Image (cartoon, rainbow, N blue to C red; front, side, top):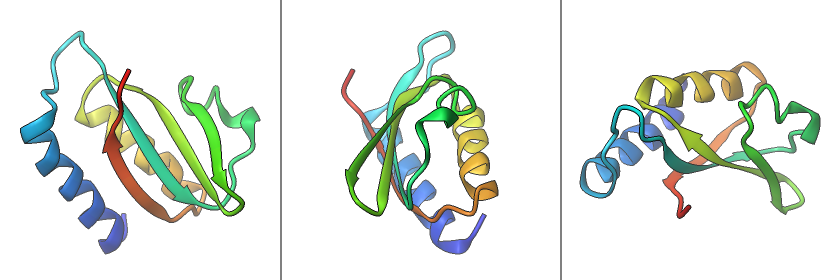
Length: 93
C-alpha cells in the first residue's frame, strides 16, 4: 500500500475510533472512492459493494465491512487493480 493510501486509511481509522465501533457480527457501512472507473461486473469480486460513478474519472464503492481486516482486504483488491485511493469514509445505512 502506498504512503498516500496508508495516510487515508489511518485518517479513516482515527475517525472510526470516534465515529464507528468495529463490532463482531455487526458490519459497518463504508464509502470508498478511487480514481478511475471500475466496471460493474466487478461487483461480485468486491463482495456485493454498490458501484457508483459520481463523475467521469472516479468510482465510489459503498457497502458493508465486517471488520478492519476485511477493510484492508478490500483496499488490497483496489491496489491490485492499480487504482488510486481517494478517500475512505463511514457511510449511512
